[in-house]
Image: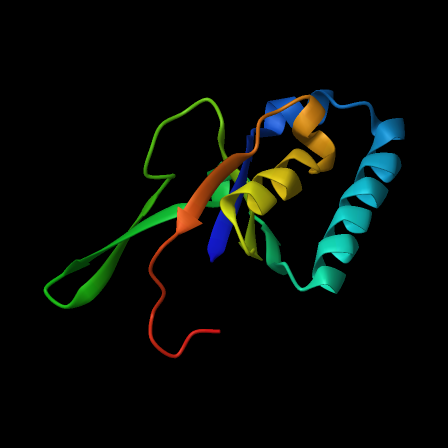
Length: 120
């Protein structure tokens, strides 16, 4: 079954992270990604742009209408997500707990019960 891991944050939080610690943090995240890509459980990992770059798109009279901003006004927002394919919920929980940032911030875990036809 597939699972979505979601990481939340904001630019203020990342700006407060000591610059000298970024290389180590990135190396840990790369190691996590490599580890679970090699097991076949990590299907994809995606980092999102800052919320200031989000747009809302609607349709009016058949044409897109684009406005600024994320859909929800929140202090923190979805910053990155990981798509897993695991044999069980317990295994997905183990992988979520292995996320390098899980000591400091929770990882949101959602089962993905439906998938569009023709997907992986």
